[in-house]
Image 1 (cartoon, one colour):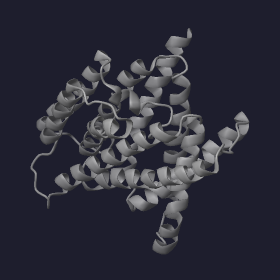
Image 2: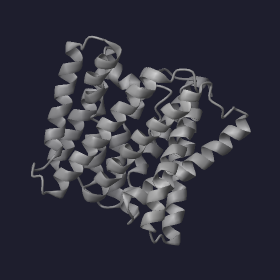
Image 3: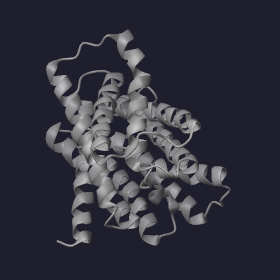
Length: 298
C-alpha cells in the first residue's frame, strides 16, 4: 500500500468518525456544559498520553503563548457549547449544516486581520452558502426550536471562524497535537467550576459515552487526521472532510431516526456543493483554513 492510498484511507476514517460525534448530543440527555467538559477532559488526557509517548515537549516557547492558548480555549468552550446546544434543541442535520457555514465568516474576517482583499469569488460562495442556510431552516420563527437550533449552529460556526483566524494569526510554530492538547485542557479547566456548581447527576452509561466521545471520536480521530495530512495534499483533505455533514446526517437517520426534509436536503446539498466548488477551483483560502494544522475541530 503506497503512502497516498494510506493517507486517503486515514482521512476517510477520520471524516467518518468526525461525522459520528454530533450524535452524542442526542445519545446524552445531559447539559451541553457536562458534555463539553467530559469530551475535552478525556480528550486532553488521551492527547497528553500520546504526547508523552511521542516524547514531544509540553513546554511552549514564550510565556505569552500560554495566555494566548487560554484565550483560544475560551473560544473553544463557546464553540462546543453552541454546537451541542444546537444538536439537542433541533436536529443533527440542522446543527452540522449551519455550523458548516463557518467559511462565510472566515471570508469576511480574514481580510480584516490579514489586510487581504475580499475576492468576488469568495463573496459569491458566501451567498450561495447563505442561501443553503435559508433552505435548511424550515420556518424562521425565533420561538421555534428548529430556528433556535440553526442560530446556535451559526454561533458555533462564527466561534469556529474566530478560532481559525486566531490560530492562524498567532500560532505558527507548534504542532497540531500540542495546540489540540492545550485547547482541550483549557476548555476542561474553564468548565470545571461550572461542573462543581451544577453538581450534575451523571449515570455510568453517560460516563462511558463521554469517554468514548473524548477518546475515540475526539483525540484518536485528531491523531488519524494529522497522520493523513503527511501523505495527501490539503486540498484533497478538504474535499474528503467536506463529507462530514453528509456522514452525520446519514448516521442520524440510522441511529436516532432523524429523517431530514426535502428542503433541508436541498439546503445541505447547496452548502456542501459550495464548499466543493471553492475547493476544486483553488481560489478559496477559506476551506484550506479549516484544515490548517492549528485547527482540528473535533
